[in-house]
Length: 451
Image (cartoon, rainbow, N blue to C red; front, side, top):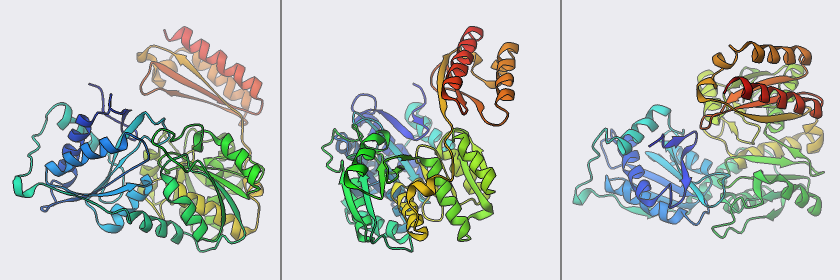
């Protein structure tokens, strides 16, 4: 069996790959590893998004948790960042979110949070995995009188909404906000928070039926929100993903404002208020070239990490940085939460609009988006690493020639796939047709030389 834990917990087709049996084992092993040294009966918070499979997985996971003596508090349908916040706020020993984020409804996932509200480190996930797959440690079931039990507390979502509202010092009276809830977790939080802050809110895709989460809506289908903003005459639109840990925006004209632009706007606002630690933003190598150019122009220090919000967070925690994230809209504001939080990020963005009195289109003009083209090259697994493909003279010379020709107005980025025999060739530049040709040529060369 391959690695169970990916970059964001355990994922799979519900009831086929991610089965109730596996969820039970994950609950047992997870509770054992995360709470084994507490010396008391641990309490674990469990939440889920709106997928139809959430019920069977929650029941099985809860049985596993209780079988080793844990007490389970079920928060019901709730955003992923709410679990991260509430674990810390309420003193739970751990938290679990049942969600597959932006994926279609037939997928689901299980993601753990430590008692400090952080996603698990690789070594912790590896230990849980080894218990399940290799039986590396024996998990002792609780004796009769020590079996855990389950309680519901759906009022916890109210605590999260109050928290999200508390992250701004301005009111939203007079502003019109359109939101696309992706028929997911934000259906129970976003409208309430924004209306209580004084905004006039127009809502779409907030009627989940168990099978329509992310279906032609949310942050993966931004065209839905673009049309909705124009139809309602809203000042700004926010599109969440299924578990509401990320958000993308559109301006008053329906034009996309992605995670890079959101980070740029919020970071500059934070600096103007003396809240940007070390004048630094943390992004991944996949952020748009325009984001890095904006940083140079505005005097922001932008650090780059590998792709994945966990690497962004690691860098932020290591050096005390306050804002970081990804182009996809997964933005971490460490002053408020320990993971990406779509609602808190949306509130931060709208707060800048209110403070400055500027339209979102004007704020977003701080950076120019450079065209990006991504082409996959199928290669042998042993040639995916940089030291192998750069050892091929023709490939190295092609890359160096392209980068020299761009002279700072473009770039070549090559990333190996973590799961397939592919390298992803990404080229940015000013002329989309030109960079498309370059990317296809380089990908074809890599396929020729690395097979």
